[in-house]
Structure formats: C-alpha cells, structure tokens
Image (cartoon, rainbow, N blue to C red):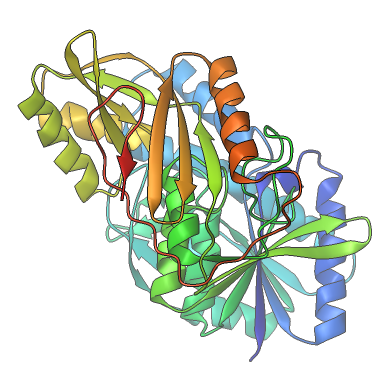
Amino acid sequence: MKTIIVKFGGSSFRDPCHYARVARHLTELRTAGGSKIVAVVSAMFGMTDKLKSTVLGVNGEATPPNLDATLAIGEMLSACLLEAAVSCLGIPVTSLNGYALGIRTNSDFGRASVESVDPQPIKVALQEHDIVIVAGGQAIDQSGRLTFLGRNSSDLTAVVIAAMLGEQACEIYSDVKGVYTADPHLVSGARLIPKIGYGTIAQMSRQGAKVLHHRAVDYAKKHAVTIVCKALTSDGAATGTIVTGYGYSGSVTVARDTAVLAAASVAERDTLLVLLDQHDISSICFEEDGRPCLCIITDIDFAMRLVAAAGTRAVAIGSKVVVTELNGAMSRVHLHVDYESAMAHAQTIHEQMHPAADGDLVIENTKLRHRRRPNGGGGEVA
C-alpha cells in the first residue's frame, strides 16, 4: 500500500481555522495521487510553552514523566482538531497518539530515544481509513508510560513512520519553503538551499538553527529516507529543500536560548562535556573571568537534568547568544552577551559568505566536522 507521509509543524496551526486549510490540502493529496496519507502534527503554535508553564505553576518540581505527559497533550489536541477538520470533508479519517503508534522508546523523559517500532497499528488504521492523523513527538517506554521525544521532535516521528512503513520519503511542511543559508526571519538576504546533505543540516540544527530536528535527520540518513521540505501557500504546496546525500556549504545559525554553566575546574567541565557528548547534546567550552564554562545549545532541559544527576559543582550563571558560521569543512563559533550584537554579527557574516550577486548554491558531498575549542570568541576548526 503506497502511503504519503507528511508533517505539519506548529507554524501551520497559528489559529484553529488553519486546521481546515491543512485538511483541504490532505484531501487534495488523497484525491490527486490515490495514495493513503499519514499526517504527523505538532502542537498549535505556542501551546507547548503554555502547557509547560501551567504544569510548573501547579508544581515547580513536576517530575519528568509528569512533564512529558503534560506536554504531549498539545500534539494530541492538534491531532484531534485536524481529524475533526478532515471528517468535515467526508474523508474516512482517524487519529493516533503515542499510546497507539507502535513506537517504543527508552525512559529518558524529555528527550526519549526510539528503541523499537511496530508498523502494525498504523497499517491497520490505514486499511480502515484514507487518512491517519498522528500526534507527533511522543511514544511510550517499555513500561507503557508516555514519553516525549523532545522539543520540535514531530519531524522525528514523521521520519520514523516513513521508515517503518517502508517509504523512501516524507514531506515536512512549515511556514517557510525549506532550509535557508540563515533564518530568513532574522537575516536579510538569506538564500533558499535547493538540496542539502544529511550531515550539513544536522550540524546546522545542532548549532541552534530552527530547521529540521537533528535526530530526525540522523534517523533519515540511517534508514535512507529523503526529507522534502515544503510550505503550504495560497497556490498550493511549494517545495523548497530536499535533504538527501548531497551537501551544502555556507550558512549562519543563531542560538538565542542557551544555558551557561560555570564549572569548578577544567577537569569538571571536561567531564560534563563528555557526558553531554554521549547524549548528543551540543555544547561549547569557553573561559569567562578566568572560570571554565560550558554553553549548552540543544536539549537544555534534558541536559540540565543530566548535569544535576552527575553531582558536579557546576553552577548555572545565565545564557549567551551563539552565532555559528559553517563553511565547508570550517566551523567557527562566536559567543555574544546580547541578542542585538549577535544579530548584527550574523548579518555581517552572511553578507561576506553570500554577496548580493550570488545565487543559490549546491555543493555535493560536503562533510562538516566540528570540534569544540575553549575560547571566548569562537573556535575555528579544520
């Protein structure tokens, strides 16, 4: 049974009326191609933060399993609303959440990793319905407890489902057509990248780019799933970037919400760095006022739990804005104390990389390697 896998992020659902728009698109896909459809959805825009704030308002020390179950409600609600919108159009439809997806994870709440998959629940649902709506970013652990795959991890759910159903591609929809040389909302002159390699886009994500979830890209590469980035426009679906075996060189990323830890010693910082690396969490070493520090870029909530459990004397001292320039095999990291200077620097770097006369560029087989260096301004690697 040929199945189209699509994913719609929170930016597609800024208002309840947007569910009807997505439903019409899913109906058109079903009618035009004859294939059945699995549509993975994220929570409505801003909903995850509201849910987190609400549960922490009730209990500021809510347990990780409690947090996961709470945050998953956003995607469950989104799936129910889209199911209702599709049903209005007379299409046989159902929705599934983490309890019924056939995806099992470990028990690293807040950032659970996929351990096994069973395609039968989704296959059965597809036999009985034309469209299956899936709540993204969630699964269950081996004890049957709901687990959250991490912030913005609906991408991962879509890729996992594509792989488990034997499909070679999945489509990711957002408010922009695809992957750009910089965030087009922040940096003027950002260029759309038509094709990009798995490693390059995963590196951009790890350095703070609001693009595809890096673990989704890693899973796609491992299972040979091509990711097609699209946007839903007034003229229909527009394809922007294809993520496959090709590579691209020349981008700037900005990570605003980071966490800075001051370690008691260089040895302690290095120990924490190894711990975070083991869990695929991006971080940068630097010195501040003579103190060894660590700036955590990705999966911050999960990382802080790891640090706390490690029993170190590291102290959270605030945040930095991280600007990273990726250019071929070169990676240079810059730390800023304020957002304005970081954005001005990012704009300057991008203009140097991509003068106004340049067009979109695609470079094949580019591999990025990143090694962290302990310095305050930025680390250049070969």
